[in-house]
Length: 247
Image: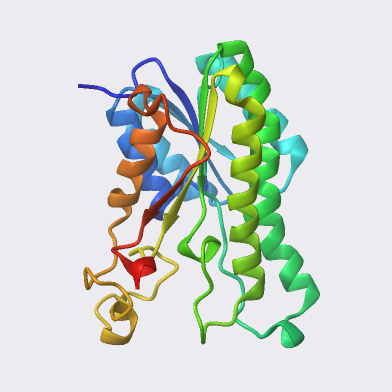
């Protein structure tokens, strides 16, 4: 069964890692997918490998003008947008608040928080025309709780912002048939994590399941939220953390 038949989806940060897993899974389940990323070569190659149901557009999520181009292109190729996965994000540099460069802080907030806001602001009008929509904002367990001994004020602040933006948008558009939820991964095997650390006991210790997630395990949660199976779900937080936040 194809769970996203007749859906038109935008996936940011879609060239590799979590975004690539989302793009492949969504196309497999019948969606028409617009992949966006700053990584042009990788994104274009991915879209080509997925066939006629995927296109790639180079895109910086912090650019409002860029978002206008994304929406116009999506509507021209596939019709009104019904799914948005705000996946693009950066980790930034780890530093205590007093030691964190303000420009570094603004850079992380711009991608992780402003990018989510601009994505929703730009795509919701198309969803309203479609009469339906599902927005999945990829946050982090760091958007729910703070891990001691891991100073990263910019990243944590940006992910808590995503959690709040998700709830606000969900309430604002609940009566317009647009659902908005957030997904909160723990450790995931992506390019952000050094492969040497995938089996490091110190990295795995906080997770009761004793391993990092594969990107596809996160993408399946987004697939559910994007589908009509999740029609009564909005303003919710979905942890994909192997039990980490239960400790």
